[in-house]
Image 1 (cartoon, helix red, strand yellow):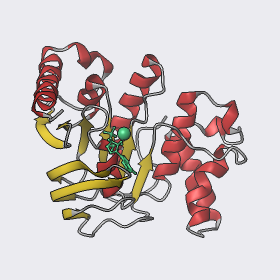
Image 2: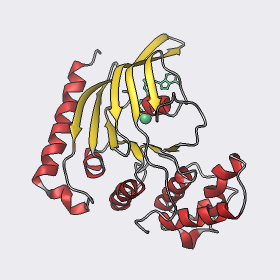
Image 3: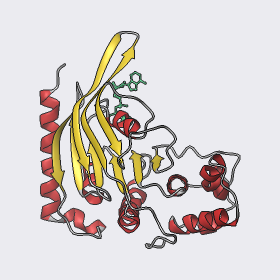
Length: 268
Ligand code: ADP
Ligand code: MG
């Protein structure tokens, strides 16, 4: 995998949430999910969201992506309100959701097809994306022939296809074994640095959050609210061995303490 962007990239965009609240309307009534979320993310910053299941992490990402609405507050991504289908936001999920009838190359090309962009530069861009994620050799393989880690690399290349300023990643490494996971953690952190994208990662792993992020937002549950905002002042580039350092452990403990506090404060 190359560590330098093969094509010029768009700089990251800042994200601002101010007083954001969200509830879902369900058969049993209104379910409050997020309450009064204030969050300023700098352009190019790498932020992880951690918190118990159901605290609204995925909802928060979907709000930023413009996939769900919110009841109160304001949200801006690069000075504009979120809107579904913005091509300056890349989204990556736990499952790679590759189209089984398209090969690797065609899956990465899909965003261009949907945006009706064609021409020789599209082929070049697809090749450079495959190079970026270390899959040039797999261009003509089918999704079912790939390992889980390779599938997520394809999903990553596809999310980067239109060169978004913002990357949203919802537990993208959860289905991988620990070794593959750590490997991709380091590579994706490096890539985010090189490409300058603003990145929000949702993860259940405190270690993964500390290893990759500039900053970790801990959320409490019932309703989802911010209970900790922890700066990760560990040098970059990040390396796997840093997990063993005293500073790493200290920050991990701070995150765990914030999460424990968030569980306490929650209503039953
Ligand atoms: P997380 O990603 O932190 O696990 P989610 O954002 O997925 O949390 O969900 C937060 C809460 O909102 C959960 O209680 C979940 O069941 C509920 N929820 C999520 N999506 C919907 C929906 N479309 N309609 C109703 N309730 C939802
Ligand atoms: Mg979720």
